[in-house]
Length: 168
Image 1: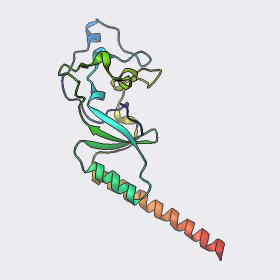
Image 2 (image 1 turned 120 degrees about the horizontal axis):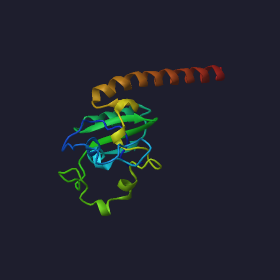
Image 3 (image 1 turned 180 degrees about the vertical axis):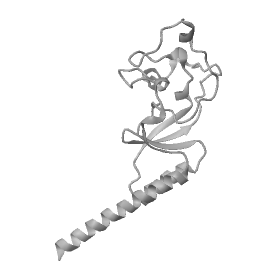
Image 4 (image 1 turned 60 degrees about the vertical axis):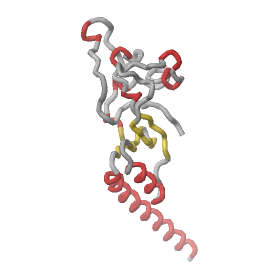
């Protein structure tokens, strides 16, 4: 199981808004190939955690994902084929100013996040278009799961029929 901030925040920005210093000419414009533009940060990655989960492959797995989505502040999404459970929760060290209250002693995960050579650019450069699937309600997931479980049942029926014919 992985736990890391990921590109493509699912929720809108909440909290303090910062005037981009780049617009004042005080700092260079950020680039996708450069370091994270911390001077422009709205701390989106400090407002949730995302944990990798198994793709639901059977009714029991679907029921578990549905249960997740019945809780407030929970989303499930797929990015690059990997499934994630997102829980909206603010880091306790995120200050009202949007700065990190433990910046000098922050976890390595935070230090590495957004470095192009490690994780790719941070969420400042991302949009929501990279999701293969995104569920923010149990009803949306149920609609997807119904189709997927029907496909699964059809595959299982074909396998049973093949086995039956092979034995006969």
